[in-house]
View 1 (tube, rainbow, N blue to C red):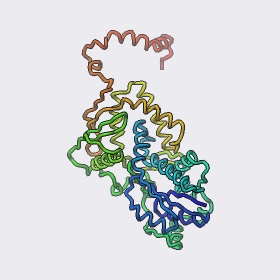
View 2 (cartoon, rainbow, N blue to C red):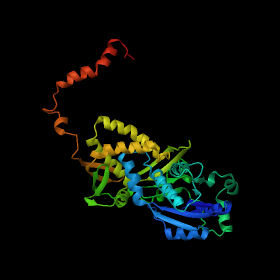
View 3 (cartoon, one colour):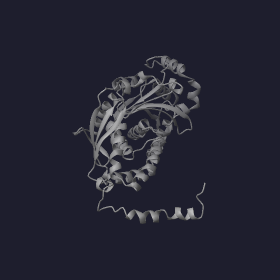
View 4 (spheres, one colour):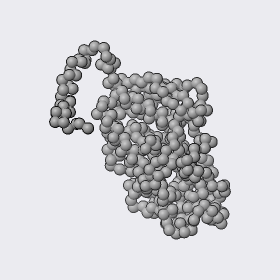
Length: 401
């Protein structure tokens, strides 16, 4: 049997690698996705081979991550309960590449280390089912034999020592941390107590607003068809542009949130996130969309952005509804082109200017001064027709409280 394992090099997946090799008498291929998490990938590869992997794939997926997923979510201005989907967006990209490797290696199964309480198990497994339904899915944290063997972290450390798995034995982390190019999420441990504030020292991407510079920083972002293409009048590759905005936003304390969200499995979870670059981009995209989208388009976007965010969060990236929504948002974003200038100051994003050649905002029409394009007298007939149902209900006495 041959299994491709989504591997991070941490205690859990290191133990899982050895466990799967023993339990299934299988060849294990470790797969590591580089999504911008700044790991020592050579060390991770060496560790996987020492633990028993026959082969290790380390795949740089940063550009694909941004262009195939992040920009699509940006064009939809999607989020889930105010969360910008940093972890949710990463999982289908990881699982897709894992499936590709499994097919290339003629593997029998794919495996992951997500627990049975979280959302990631769904995101991984729905991707497997969508792209390679013929593959067996192995999820140790839902395996009775695995759960009987490992009651907790101490059991895993003992197993690692017995099997000479190279691990760094440390005290239990006060919280879990999951970084990628878009964000870092912090959950669990001491953060589970909602009566206590988060520890300021835990953040890696952002300074606190209080510690941000006392002088505002001004930036300009240019969009073409809903996608950012220039930063401060300079062209960047997609992932490099996001990296630059992460640095700029981070030093100005942009993009921190502390929320209690509703997981797919029904559990409430407190999550603390720092997402500096994408926070700036969503804000900027919306500034241009305000100029170019009319009322009907904006109302439709407001509804479908919620649906898009749910599809991403709930693991249904590979789904006909998402494909259809992408076509719609591609159409709507044909005119989301232009420039925005922003002032960043101690956690705040302040608009300075916005412009688009497709803008349907016309100060001549909006002005209270006279204009040939709008006659105030026309409003009388419009209100009479628009208000007719209200007037009839008023005559019938139906609107009295």
